[in-house]
Length: 233
Image (cartoon, rainbow, N blue to C red; front, side, top):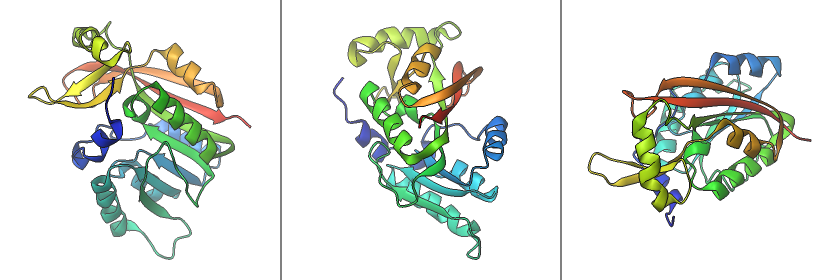
């Protein structure tokens, strides 16, 4: 499939970028246990998670390719940043597969649904390779990802089959608007596939599978994965 995934996300309406609304409680417990201080929110959108983390006492950098989303994140950050604080909250417009950040390496890197939306398999590999470079040795990676959902949602089964001739990859389909125009590509993972992808740069991989309402289709059910891993030394 020949498609400019970067263009899709650079031009996507900032307030409609699909993501999980909040970080799970178990992640905050893990960050506390690991004594995490610095966090990279990779593919941060309008910065909701990054701002939440800053309010909880972490130093946070948020990165996204969508300029309008980062502008909104910066505007919200200005409302809460406390100049005397030792912690920082910064946002940059950057491609998350090719990052150079003066704040790196980080204690933890977070990605909300990004690995499902970044593009094709090469983009997913680049994303994880870059994440590994930006994490301290033995640092924490957290991500959420969409799971294969054809067994609980017949619409996904139909969509996978319909779009396979276009995408060339099973369980990758094209998200469209109400008029049928393609918005972006989405990949749904099997648990085995996600684990094998993470094993190239990470260890101690733990994956939780949940059945929830779809991020973009709130009236439809789907599977989601929540994964944590430790960077290999």
